[in-house]
Image (tube, rainbow, N blue to C red; front, side, top):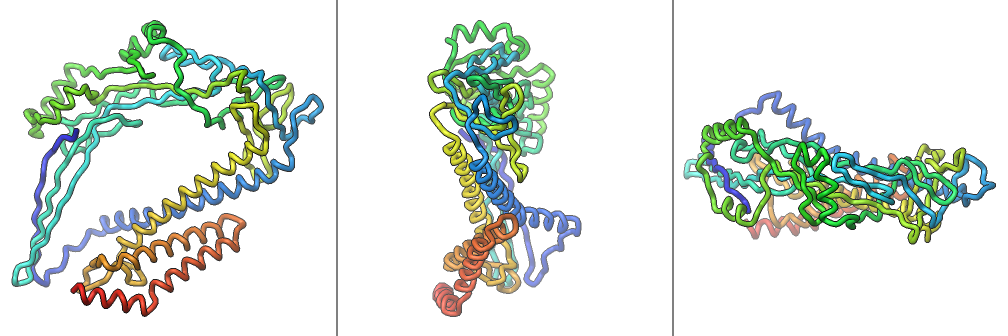
Length: 445
């Protein structure tokens, strides 16, 4: 449940004909840098994803020609496919919690932090008197919510940092461990191949709650930070503030005026057992190999029947692991291509959102779509939403096309996509469309 922080009301007066206060050159420079960074960030990410997909496609095309089954007569240095139901990874342990993970290929420790998060809500209204003088009233209200996050949140810059203090304790951050080696039939698979295993994560329990209590009660996590197993796969450590920290926080709350600020949210959160800021909980996931499922790998055959990463001609490092023996190299390559494709699809979605924001907020829109300059002030007309959508789609298409032209071999496809974007721009600026929206504006006005 949200806590309500302070509310600020600011007033701004401007006489008729009075110009806006000029922005300081340093502020203007910083603002420009941020705007440029926002403009180029998404196209750069999209270009990277397109290039990554192109490299993956080229590597897979080469691998399909080179891959051979691993046999006793296979030449060392070959790209091989090996599978077996005889699979045994070396033991993975987390000494900090006194835990062992038999048969695990990879183990992921996920750490979560109970932290305050600050939100703001801002309302603004502008009034003009009969002389044209402008009076703008802006109300800003701060809200705070406490919950579990996968990262610590710095509360130093909160409006009320003492009342919503986030301890930055982080004794056991999230990490992923990979077994030092895996025996697959007659072969030994190196960790460089196994690090690419990212499917089949499970949270199944290997021990009972009583066993977990016994295993962890003498661990450094329990002794030094009070971690205990609390069920549902979680190890929990409550935050215990020192007397000095408690005193300093009380002083800070008194100075900011929040020492006696008790709200219904505090009672509700207390009754329902919400965590305290600074609490930490840890949960484990693992990819577990078993003789019933077996395993399969694709990689480079090395000396002593070891399988490592194969470097393709374009520098792509090929090393694949599948947690089942009932597969083949072709299926593993298809999954690799599918993963690369979905990353690019995510890039397309992000590009469309980015294009919508750019065409909406930036006043230098060359086609004067949703932004119209009247008396030097940019204004928005709700009836221009169709033109805005068209311009956003056009900008997204041009961006995608440019990325394909610049970083991939799909020159023709890139030209077609970019050309489609230019066509949409031309259509959105057609006189009959502009005239139609112009009429609607007149009716609205």
